[in-house]
Length: 65
Length: 437
Image 1 (cartoon, rainbow over the protein chains, first blue to last red):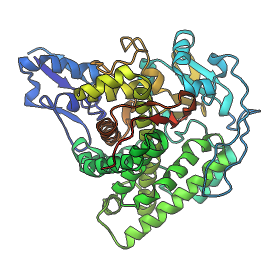
Image 2: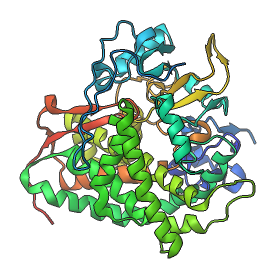
Image 3: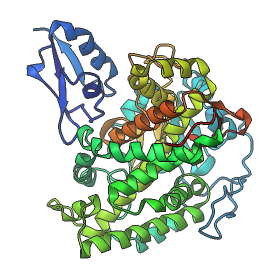
Image 4: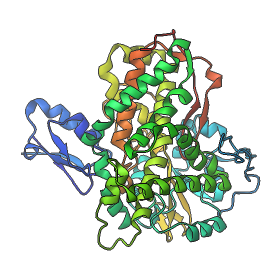
């Protein structure tokens, strides 16, 4: 399981970073970036779904692989 | 479209005679006949409990219209607010207050105010928007705002020391209202003891000034003059503060602006946008827990619920409605926003849309899926959202630590303000007396 962040859609709400700092980091402008190439360890699968469901800009998606 | 207030809505100019106090101007607003065609964002029912009105509108007429207060449109669906926020710059942010100044007063503003004043990026469209936003965003990055935690914690404790032995307080005036102006003053490097002045000035612009243009201009000018003096002092002799930091920044190529004027504009944004809004959120949360003992007990017993509880307070009691102005005719979903029309970015109503939120009208302090847009959507996402969240988190945690048992002392005595920024302005709270530290 991987997550992908559309950095064009991301407006820096930082909800993902607050919920799952294991999966994303944010830069000085508040833009979110995936950690570890977006790979989600199995034990964080629920958190990955949580950040998808809490992103106000619909900027995060779960992708296969 | 005329920007004159509708007949019968002419505000009296009371309360603007001196700088020592600020009273609500008298409004004689006729009752709303039909919310879909004649809504009034200052109507007492709308200010006190807008949720049922939004829900009706979303069902009947999801983009309502009114001729009141110069005329405006009021979207209520989450998807529409998201889409409208992306129509940039045709739906422009150059006039973001929910009621425009009368045209003759706008001309006066353009003549008197130097280039750069305003409150960019909130009052700007691209490219000025992006340039100024980049200047301030690092101040409010999640890790950067942690620098203000110790000051904010100490401030909250000291405020509680001031009234905890009494067993009662006005949680709006004595607590919520005192926090954001001091944190912002601290951040900017301005004397925090001017907090009460800041609060009065900002209410003069964003609250009472909305329906009293003379009052709005008066306090806008007071803020401008004050900030000019502060910025000029740092231009002459830099200090270790944000105003000096902004003054030293490179101005991007293509941005032809006076440096001092630009920094005054940024300071204006931080002051005006960072006070009423955050104070309202803190007050609304205390209102909620003071009137819902089951949620209060639950949060007091389980502090791990603070993060979801705060997001739910932000969703349910979203304080801020911003405005856009159409720079051209903009057709959208069967209506046309004509050039000059105002569109009220009703993010609070979006946050009650059952299409996006399960049990949208229930307050669930452990809500897991919460895609709220209390801080807006699109390129104008509140630049200070991380600081606002930090202040809310500290204000509530310190309150719950010191005063875990509390309730509204007089539910009928609660007074709400609304329009641009909704929140309790009088919040009588009772609790078992405690000890100052």
